[in-house]
Image (cartoon, rainbow, N blue to C red; front, side):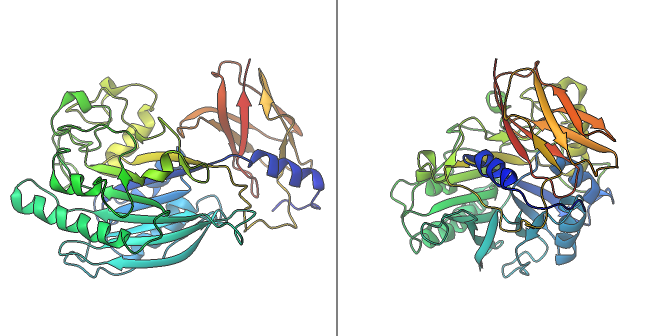
Length: 414
């Protein structure tokens, strides 16, 4: 640990950077975790998560509390005690091995409540998260997060079961404050926007109106026109893995939906164009996600990890708040070992480091979609200058592997 006295300068820098904060969400069907092959998937998941750094991480197909702890300790907290998991609840529905769970960034949220909504198929798990804001006592921001895994497969009976599961959710909406911020996410197993479950979810007469952030209705299954939002299957053949689906990427099964107020309320607002099928470069129709033909912004390394991890891709989406986030787990006997000279940069991002640092350290620059754009490694220096001149104008994030260091936000401009 790197300790020094807390300074007023650090407080001012922290508060100014966090004045308009981004909240990153990810939902991922992990495919029979942890039992499915290969055996090192906790480490593979760690590398996937490191590419995006979600603040709220929602999962499906979690088999056990042992698997949950493996995710927490190996995949999420590999660089320190940064995440907390909600209590693992054994299934109260018909499928004991496929459970949902949420993990969240320590200090950014507190868990106010959790519950299980049983259905004939699988549980729907509901969590109330409170954002750690400066005025949380007088004007709290509560976030109602529901994670689900709707019934799979085609056919009238399966469509009906999907509908009944969604009805459990929409019935629960009637008991919430009508102004609630609501997120409903998971593996929906939907083939088309005309399915009763999808129509029930977006019914404008619901107690809280829900929306699909990207508003791309249609017949998603085996339709090349939706190849940029497909999330299943990552593999042409599932044979080498012994689990999951094959056939290549041709279904939009995985979703994040939000309450309508999150389109325009500055307290918790969806950032347009931030909703992505993570790893999908939009050119992988009916192909394996790791195919060299599926090149683009998402790297080959990431796509190899996604291929090995699951037959689904994660869905990511960013939110923003005009509230001032105060990280409640900050140890005020410590100060970040680095400081940006300026958060408005044109060519060089200049960083000053604690003179007591002696170990090798690295810096990574991410865009607002969570994509890693730059990496810099150095050691035994009190000053680092990173060339960012090639970046487009916009907001970026600087992350370091140094203990006790926050993620910094900076603006690149000409």
